[in-house]
Length: 264
Image 1 (cartoon, rainbow, N blue to C red):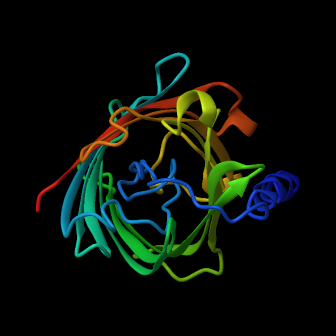
Image 2 (image 1 turned 180 degrees about the vertical axis):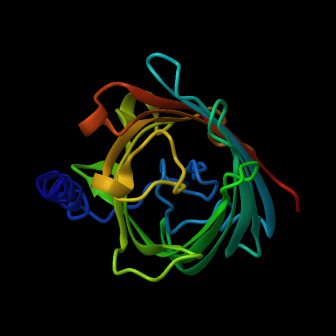
Image 3 (image 1 turned 30 degrees about the horizontal axis):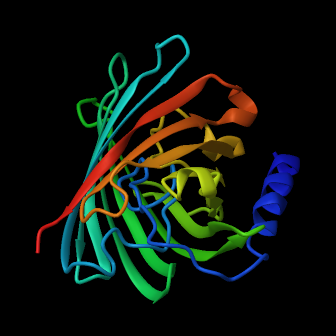
């Protein structure tokens, strides 16, 4: 795990250095946990931080393995308010022996400049709701997103430090860490509508996630994000991602996206 963490972190750190030219308005799709972010990593951005005082994003992702035996349906709703605050909820439906979970989340942007931002956030996880063994967890984090160019290609890098804790148990010293990037894929061809998103994280969107084992050894997730309505006042973002590819290989994936619109 330590070797994997070092290699991935060095790769992503390198992407933060070249250039400072900023790219056009980010698609800012929803992460699996519901907040604006990459795949499982929240960013320092807010879904409607510059364009409206009240915006809504609705997301859905379906995750499974190659045998279609480990399935999840993840549904999100996020509200952006006052161009600084984001809040909402996620329902994680897990068929079979597992039971469904609910996540409530919030994020407040404390800094914004151009396409870069920093936010304080957290979530409250209600796990195994229909089981006799319900669990409750919480997470707090600081997310920082820096926008720049990687070899003259528009990109942004996000670093997150946080803490997930079992509300019913004692405090431990483990911390949450993730690092990820959002890179325009062949911008001369796709004009910024297709992006490559990747991340390494030692936590997932939920303690009860079935598609990564991030808490035990970290997980590398990667895939494509496509902006269907680029340049529109609406948002329609499609994601297709591979999950935990270093340890599980090309075995687990998620597909879905989000739709957003201004309410005021």
